[in-house]
Amino acid sequence: MSQADIYTVSRLNSEVRLTLELQFRQLWLVGEVSNFIAASSGHWYFSLKDQAAQVKVAMFKQSNRYASLQPKNGQQILIRARISVYEPRGEYQLLADMLEPAGDGLLKQQYEQIKATLAAEGLLAPERKKPLPKKVQKVGVVTSPTGAAIRDIITVLQRRAPALEVIIYPCLVQGTQAPAQIYNAIQKAITRNEVDVLLIGRGGGSLEDLWCFNDEQVARLIAHCPIPTVSAVGHEIDFTIADFVADVRAATPSAAAELVSPDQQQQLQLVLSAEQRLQRSMQSYLRQQQPRLTALVHRLTLLDPARRLQQQQQYLDELQMRLQNALLRRIDKAAQQQQFLQHRLQQLTPLVRIKQQQQKLSQHNHQLQQSMQQLLKQKQQQWLLQSSRLHTVSPLATLERGYSISFDEQQQVITDASTLQPGQQVKTQLAKGHFIARIEQISAPSDATN
Image 1 (cartoon, rainbow, N blue to C red):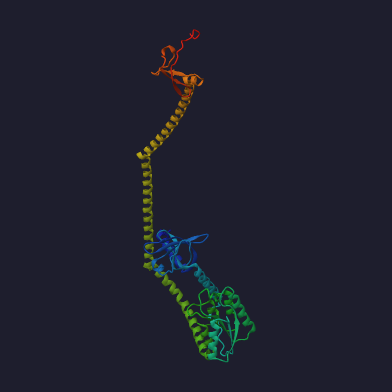
Image 2 (spheres, rainbow, N blue to C red):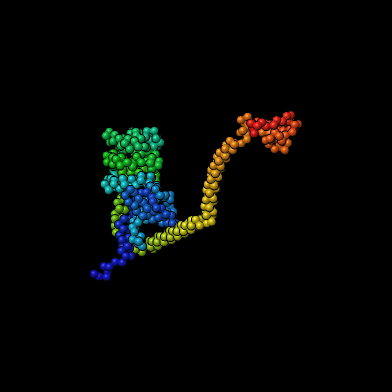
């Protein structure tokens, strides 16, 4: 094995990048945006994904500054990009230079696909286009009978060739039903075979308004129409598929009417012939120059300092993002440590112990109150019992049975009548109330009582 057969990682990644970039020069891709990052350098990095896979995309500042929108995560977009390799990590990625919402972008993508399909079949080739007839007597018009296009065509034809007969094949020229009606109108003109040239079109409008003239079936019918056709769609900048497959393309319906006017036929044939020769010459020249262009592109890719600068810019963005992520992790870890220490401090603070002791004190106070209430209740029951017993032996109870007690002036209980003197006042206590009496007579105790 020779030394030349041994690759370094850098050499391998570089050659893989060159191979991919030369093999896939440019492509359109539609998908959902995820992981979008707008770096401080102005570059955009995101992933484009569908249900089964995803690919990384980089859109540098010099390209995204012209973008009509900044993509958001979850948004469907269409991008134009070329495949490359981010050599420091050996990752394949897309370098986008155009970005737009998927709605209009899908229509444009579908437009390019239909155009490419028809071109591959030779339906757009100048060699197959029929020249307009030198003598035109009847002009057929496939358009809306109430639109501005038919009024412009009739106005021009009446001014330039009043004797020219115009036959209108009415149809819708906008909406979902328009392609089928346009197809049927052209088919009717072919079946009748009553006109010398067929104008197909309408006034100007948006891409959606003119989409019926990009219909593949309509385009194929126009391409195979035996009657010379003129595309008369009223938009001067953009082209529809009908413009490419028709024998002649006019910028507006009025211009189409002028092209089929008799006094313009000879000059138109000269122009068309010169255009066809020019197209054939240009195609031949481009085919000859293609190998040289490929070699120059390869050399430019090898020597292009902007590409290496982009690689370094992307690597710098990556390092900056890694630094930011590391700082965020450090900050997050410090915040978690602070929360842990704060939690421990809260557990050890005297306020917590004071609160715990206050709770215990409250519990003991509650228990004390319950014990006091229970003791008081027991004492009340004992008092009631003793009171009942005392009442049983109380003189008051004796008085309630009809007895009374007498007291002298000194409030001494009188138990012996001999201690009294006539005229002396005594106080007699009854069960209910008392009275004062004066001694009138004193009787000596009988012997039986003794």
